[in-house]
Length: 283
Image (cartoon, rainbow, N blue to C red; front, side, top):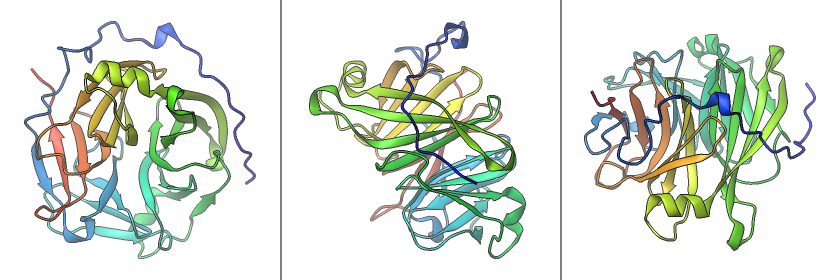
């Protein structure tokens, strides 16, 4: 496959993509972030980063950790995890699943793509590596919109000056034979996030993103400053929520299941194992 670097295209705002209700406005957030159900991860997922479900099925969670090219899979209550090797040592940040393909993001923007059926092997053999897809930068977030047939890659830092800092998001159509076609570029201005969060000057370095298919909103997680940012379908920022308390040691991954439960994964710390927090929608 041949891939070209992106030419920067501004994503267009689509009013039709807005939901009739806006459940993530301040004071009307769908989830109580202070009362999670905690699932401790096995030792080999102490440095858990990205997480994903296949078709929203929470019986099995797929995960990666920062240093090894291993794709892990397990039940949330399992004491041990299984894994398949897909690559060598590296800085792996996030993963997503689309069209029965698992896509894993490296911090340099490189992608590893393998069929979901490869998980039953000790080492995956049908792995496609995609390089030079996005501009040189540090990347931490990867997500798929299965309905739209797209994937989204999120930068960790800003490419702008201090006055106009913004995080970039690159969209791609995911086609047959793992083809990737650029389909838009979006940005998240830091200044807007600061105003909505009420936290003053912040260091926004997003670590993951996921789309809530029920509300058509994007949830963007930042490990630095421990924050959750909500946008509409076209990444127009609607709200920002600080993640306070001891539950959020180092939030690195985010996912939804088909019951619309929200999940956030945390790397372990001195006194804590890696974990996944579950937040159920408010009734």
